[in-house]
Amino acid sequence: MPIELKMPALSPTMEEGTLAKWLVKEGDTVQSGDLLAEIETDKATMEFEAIDEGTIAQILVPEGTDNVKVGTVIAVIAGEGEDASTAKAAPAPAAASAPTPEPVRAEPVEAPSSSSATAAKKDGPSPGRDPESGQMDKGERIKASPLARRIAAEKGIDLSAVKGSGPGGRIVKADLEGAPATAAAPAQAAAATPAPAAAPQQAAPFETDIPHTADKLSNMRKTIARRLIEAKQTIPHIYLTVDIQLDRLLKLRGELNAALEPQGVKLSVNDLLIKALAKALVQVPKCNVSFAGDQLISYSRADISVAVSVPAGLITPIIVGADEKSVSKISTEMKELAGRAKEGKLQPHEYQGGTASISNMGMFGISQFDAVINPPQGMIMAIGAGEKRPWIVDDALAIATVMSATGSFDHRAIDGADGAQLMQAFKQIVENPLGLVA
Image (tube, rainbow, N blue to C red; front, side):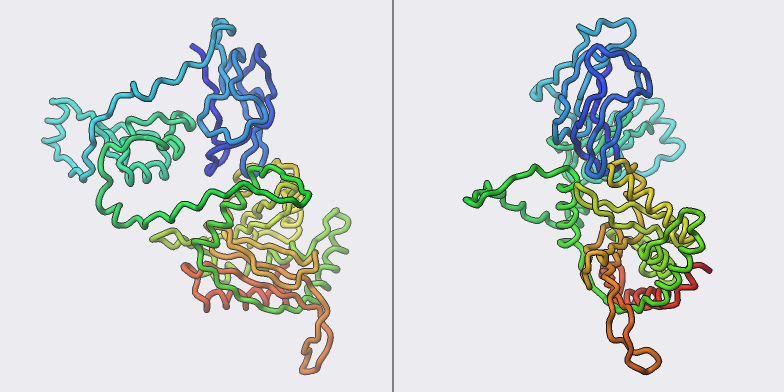
């Protein structure tokens, strides 16, 4: 029987991608582990490996195709003993021929007693599934993502009537598009779910007499645009700024670099600031949090996402456990991650997650700016340029190297006083930097 190759979900948030390049052609024999294609996600270009053996019988999606939804059949493999010339993708069934599933009752079911369970076993199991849990009465569980389960519960969709396109047949969000509602959504869900925002007006075609070029947006740029809108529309930002004297930090950096030179390590100011932010988050744990609806997630480790500019936009590789790593380790990891980020070679776990972010535009001479929070994180630290300014030193006016740092905080999760304590702790650590190497 022909094997269908489907567009894979290469990250937890991927819903569609670009089939950038085929690494095989029709007629090629492939083994498990062979590279089949390069797929561009919203953050990186990743390689797609074969898990089955056979011959590439048909390529259905040509390379360079954008917006290929997860689960779309992109090629067909003829199995052992099959004629590759006759192995083709099965035609999609007509929508009208799909049977209408029976309505499913959404009320809760009491756990059966031992006697009722025995009776149920004797009489035979009920074929229905609960639309919220996706659980069959006889105990078999449907494979579905948590998001898909929630959407199904809200819309009254019977998951047993939905074919999953995710790994192992798992039902994902995209599979629910167009799925018929077979039961009214519970009243509680309707009451708890806020009314959706009005759909934005479709943008009119751009017209101008000014000479110009028009470049198609990459998947990364589309994702950046979507997430920035989400962040600014849904997260109430509060901004807190402190001025920090850098002279001691710069002196320490010079001494450390002289000592680390034989090892080929050269610390940047940003490496030290990553460590400083991580230590400050541990000191003020009320800022090392995420807002999650009716929950507040508090982290016991400081994983710092670091904004890195790449040709296609911006990506945030993560220094995991930065509070516990030496500054030389942070420096080495950061250089390696930034290099692979610019090549589009990061793995999803290397840029998805993190407990807080840092964005440094000081190298561009920017004195101060307000950064946009990277959801679901609760804060981001924006670093400005270190510059010579008048400064009071030992009650006398002097010249010092000073930078402005601005924290953006999710005010749903972090109170202003707690954010102020974090900024105070960050300032104290940077101005007394020996603690960074203790």
